[in-house]
Image (tube, rainbow, N blue to C red; front, side, top):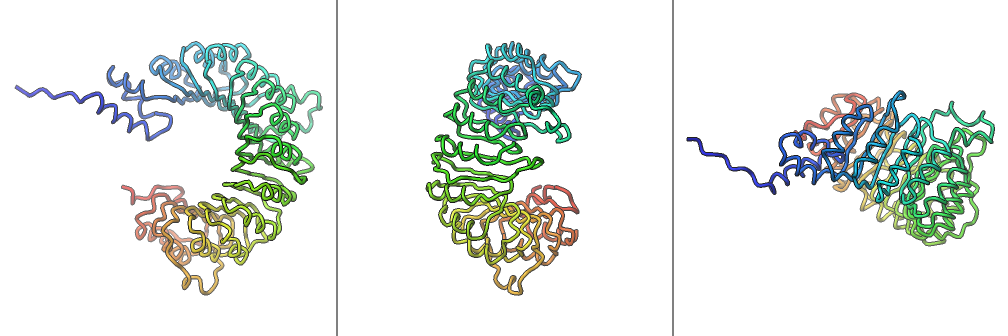
Length: 471
């Protein structure tokens, strides 16, 4: 008689299924195990906290709401233009789940006021709502949402409409009927006084007045994203001088209207907890950086579209040795000597990204690798790395910290130089050389063979692949 197999203890299955859950943040790998038996359903129900679905398949949502009773986050996307946008929202509202986060992505229109009211009355702990990239979202929709969900702490209403559908030909009084405007943001700021994070990027009818309203009414705000909005500087000044809890600000002008400059004043900054600053758009930002330096704010991440002189950048970097991440766009006037001068100002720099710096050569890579002790990620895109000084190979030293290297669209980068660069980074795991037309397939194959630590390669020849060295 065959010996009966012993069943594995539930703790072991729990560990196995937990390991599966780590592979994807939406827990998709738990779907099939949950169908095997009641024991697996019970375990996956305890583990699964997030459900992601394409809203075309509402049946999948209904089944998930019944099977997984401990969900805390639901994400629905791409609802068809002929679909009833209220149906999935009402299903969620009536599910009895205690959700903390909801994401509705690329819906044709906003769900009705009644749907959000039912959602608000049922979900007392809902803190995060993302209504991102809707085909249509208006001031009235936004007011209905925030009226129904006054306890929200995070709101995302990013817009990604085509500029051809923009507001430029719409009479001012009717803007609110078609878009989110300053009026809608002002009402939102009054309804959501516990708001901590907001993203209004792409809503180009929102101006400095929106920032002023948010900063004035939402005193707990610590993160604001407003890229692609009609911001000219006054609102940024106001936020930095009034939002004492602010830790992150990302702002940028859309650029299709007349004035894309930032006329910053000499601001007395109160946002002393600011750690991340991202300012896109033309204009002189030196006054803003001087104000930050004067306040002694220990920034950790700075991203700028540059219109600064060398002296302004150097002065700021010397006053901010806490920077860990630096992104500079369009630093056309910067050369290798300048980069060599600023490296001593970057003792804690972990990642640096330079885009469109056509005066830089491969010497800049060498300088970064040698002089920045904490640097692990280097991005030098749209440059001239193919131009090298004669002593480049002689001065190379191995750097065991760099694990990520992006040299995309360096048109003059050739095989020999790339090999020399890769050799200096023995622990390199990611290499991106898309758009480097001088590189050959043979060079890339040789690099993959000689550098078994590389796990991810993106190139014009291969596209984006995982190295066979992983297998």
